[in-house]
Image (cartoon, rainbow, N blue to C red):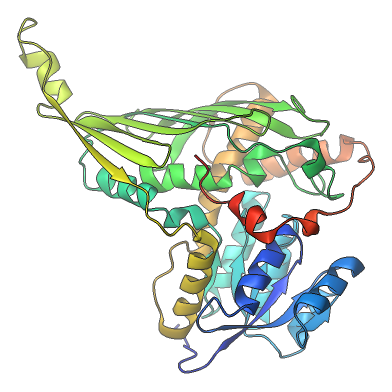
Length: 400
């Protein structure tokens, strides 16, 4: 069906979930930083958060119920920034209320729930986007272009060490849903690393199989993993190693992609591209052993100056609604990184290599067992809304 654009109008936006990141989105829109978006509603089940929302956004509807928000006819679009399990439920209801939807990552906790949301989106003419803000980074965009254009040749190996997602124990203690199977559905793979898992498949393609080891509470008092190692294989046989944790400081963010024509490394805000003058496979089988190795040239690229990835995604969402601008991250694409993390969890639980994706029903059953066997969470500390919103937003940008 054709899209209905809001030409010449401001899109009225409701923020569902006024927590750490939801309040950032509300401020960004409320301060007029997104052309074409106007903040008209905020929803949160917590009374203190609603008080803060009224204080920071006078004149905006503030409600405790997202169901009520969707019936008030004060919004054209919603931004979903709730605990993960609620993303599909709210999204499906929002599409039913003819709302455009931008959801925070991950799209869902399980692939089966993500597919329900995607199916609901497919039955409407509404815009569906996901907050993969790191796709806006120029270095990852350049890497994607180089791989897609065949400039690296056939991929051989991908190694991503992403260990600078550091979080102290107070972060996990800031909400009753955090770091629990029942409330969050996972740990570092489902909360911090979705950005990197998305970029991995966006740049290099989906793995067809993987083996993973996820360590529960290695560095924190939590019931989910704070450390994970994934070893996978791409469709062409290239190997993938993905290492992440929230328990190392200072950490590393280093992506290396090797191919038959050279390699690239993204680290410390730079992309370095080594280009071989002779394809490695050709040299390997057709050169004299004493000819010397092929000549290699190096080209470097710096990171762009605009690092406001959240704002770029919000603006792109507005432009898609108002004029049909292609989305940077379509909501439907959110299921891909979730296929990887679901497979990683299942592999770790079963202690064996698995194909990607794993059977959704089988995964759901295994996750339900973990939720059922988990004990109650300990005391919850005051939420982190008193943190500087600028500083909090930086937690979700690309850290070098």
